[in-house]
Image (cartoon, rainbow, N blue to C red; front, side, top):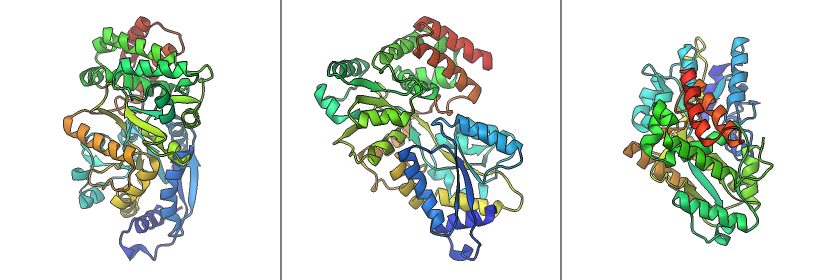
Length: 415
């Protein structure tokens, strides 16, 4: 398997120079966790780019929406001396691999394509390491979304909630109407996704202090006790069979009218679109009440492992990933928004347009924060410590006060 031919073919698919047309096609092995319906459809955009140039796609999917299983598989492959060609990575996972000095340097293409000017600053914290570009972001996902069945909301009064009190009122009305108010999958990363949004709803400064600065007083104080109290309230609206449910199956509950809403990142939109639903008509997309104007994000990025003699090809592959045409085509399908700020929103639906607008405004206002739940607020050891406490509490193992105290202790233990 030759990375040179892979990169050249991808470059052609993105409309780069025809000077690489004589390169022999080959298979590309891609390690990723895009296995759900909407995600798989988005991945097809990249597959088709390759296939039009005669490049075979060797898929290496590792199920698990948070990517933990994929990173375990990657470690085993690298240890065995058999790294995949390209690897989907998130946040501090990229930083960890960069610290091992095994990722390709992408400075040349970054300079040529002026990435510094078009990639949001918050993303660059992960795309760059020690001043060097070491990953090409594919998208920006924001995580503080609520996806609401339009028919269920109409039956519950028709007004999208804008505050915590309004959210509880809508959930109560949905429960009274005989459906599951909140579709949720009982997996640690899903519990933490809701937790992220609840923390952010307490204020930007509190989110920064607790999730990014890891301030012990913020982690253990009264505001955090209130966060866990709200998590306990949300738990009361989840059905009894939530444990172990994959996130896309929770989305299906909303799509099929069995549940009223889901609190999940914008990758969920792909499930609604794949089911033939239309934003504004069949479902609504709103920011978690109390977080309007702020965005928590994660960003799927592709990193390639440094291989001697393949630097030029790696630059071309990275350029293809960040080309405006590909960024638009991919993110329209994926449900995310482009990882560069100069891409037109013309092809995006209403939720996509809102996502792009929200991202730009949050970036300008300084209210764009890396998501703790998705590995962009703190290193993996901290994230996993948060997962453990949040999930234990969500399943009734800790009181609200105990959870806040244990959260601080757990984070302190891994710092």
